[in-house]
Length: 314
Length: 316
Image 1: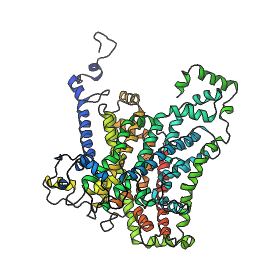
Image 2: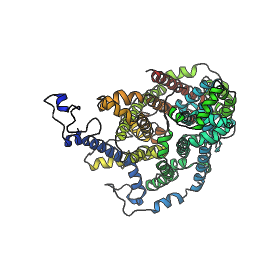
Image 3: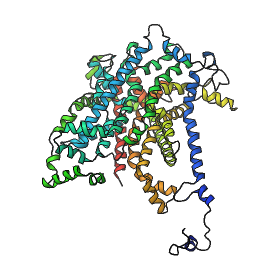
Image 4: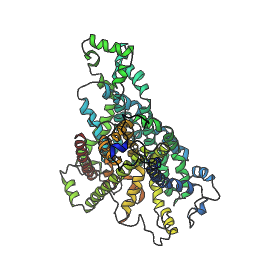
């Protein structure tokens, strides 16, 4: 309130005599229309911190178990901080080998093959298909797009059996092919995601390039893709996490241990060791999830910029 | 995005002139079957591995195909699989359990996600860390998560029960061994696993609404609840619909039960998806025909819900 400025009515005059001006302290604590009050902020932070603690508890338990010596895993009361800290569990988990099972690096290699293929194929194919749906016109476009979207909500259980039969026909059972070839279609979710993002890129860019004589392919490669880096990064992370973690697919298809992926190795841990050595199991699990954790931590911004949800309409 | 074209300088001006001189945009936009060329390779795979299995599954649902007897592949038996299902106590129980699971897990997860997203959007410091925390479980392999929870829920030595005993509860519940508790316990673990992504989607939705909108609402005197009710909620409708559709596969859920206790105790967590899995891959002669009939029911139910959600999201 500028003193002496008669044209601005003081709040006292507007609201009548009963109005008392909120004190600074009150504004600070309760807040007003323009700022969140301190009390509210403290409540929000309290809830967030408490729930973060709750969400992280299973992780804490994992790390705690992974670092215990084997004779302390089930002591009562449970030890909150392992003593001594057994860093060697990480090594042991990956070097002990059960009877005729292959060494762990075989599983890691299989997972790596499937994941690298999955990420490359998903990015390439999804982007290509998404570009067609975002920018090109062709008869039946909307119907095809809706058809692809509808596979988003079909549970895997539905196509599990017929797909299994196809793998049988193709003699692909117990090989990695079923985990690799079909994904060159891309994936419905990622196609949807990229199409949404491409549609936010102004068409003028395309048209300017077109005037300069660029072909559709060049527009796609030189203009759309470079402008879509956040979305492509988000898709890459989705694909990486999906293929790295895929469990039911490998479970149905693979039966020989030398074809197993890391997730199957983990699921079989208790079978192989006749009762699970939890400290080793958790150590193995922690190492296996590490790439996903690191990847996600560094790709957060891509997620926030790359995902655009506007409408489900085709 | 019009602002960009207005300030775009010479290049965009050239495009506009070109549009005017050629009378329309047709010469640029006119197409051509190029689109087919872009999607053709992907579509070939899609038809082979996604569309064909659906039709093959529909056909198979009307046969008595057992995998160990390949000759039964085309033994059509009309609707007898479906008749059998109606009389199959285990299938009906499993369907009930699946419905209960979907009706409990999906709304609870969406509510948690929405509440967290609204709260995270209000804070600046620590938001990045919190987004990471929330999404952490989503990057873990299902096998790890459920084996871990299996241990944490353990009756004698499990983490939860040891903590409870430490707090003075003498008889903590047998989480996975109790018929009434097993399904909610699995559901809670499942929610922990999947709530991160919806939270991120809601959060992105709220960030996209933008501070100006909220400021404008404040100037009009809208308080926190009003802002949520009349600004946030309506604008998050597409996000909400997307999240529901993305989580419909919960109805056909298999993995948590398969890993944790294979449908036990006393089949109280045997969902329809797990029953289908057992019929197809575990029961003696691998009854693919019957399993396909079950999967058709799951698919039709999911399509029905999705259709309703879709219609609702288009209403204003």
